[in-house]
Image (cartoon, rainbow, N blue to C red; front, side, top):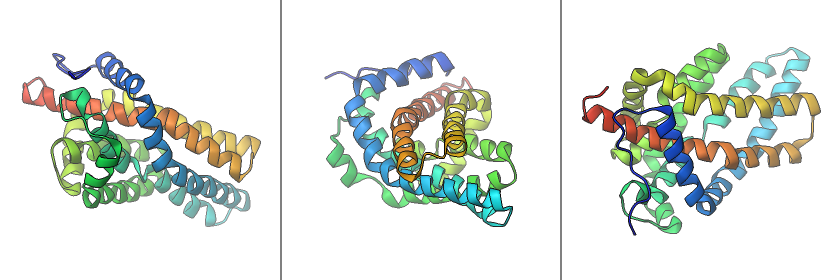
Length: 239
């Protein structure tokens, strides 16, 4: 079977990235939903609990608020690199690579490097977010491709983080538009629901898991597509 998509634009653009990534999501929808359930259903429970810690601390005006914010943001970021690694493996055929089934992908992932990226991102972005929304957003934008780069370029976790910064700093606006803003909006919507409606732990858990499947998993596909496009552009001397 021939690959469905390849990235060969003269330069990475939002239209090309989104069109290619969303096409992959349509063709691989069943597998991507399963990946989202496996990875984000457990994390959704932790995130829902963390929202409660943040709200309680805010109402009391004590140190629990700061601790809760740190925990909440860190949990939000944790798992994104692992998701990128797993998704990159199962959609690699779309980019001309070997077609690998999900069960084989799970067995062959470079877990040490991906978990290392997840931990580093959670610490960096969680810490930056304590100082404000903008520092956290910048931290996420610069490091968001690290999980994908572990897989695409066979890099270690630390090298992938540095490589992500190197690629995204040249296209910060594009990365912000197609990756960071959808993630930021998703988290703000969930937080608003938790604060305004106080739906309870179980409903928040379901909402977090559902939003992860509907928003975060497609964003991971966008990350993979963007990473491959930026690498292509760099090799062609376009950026």
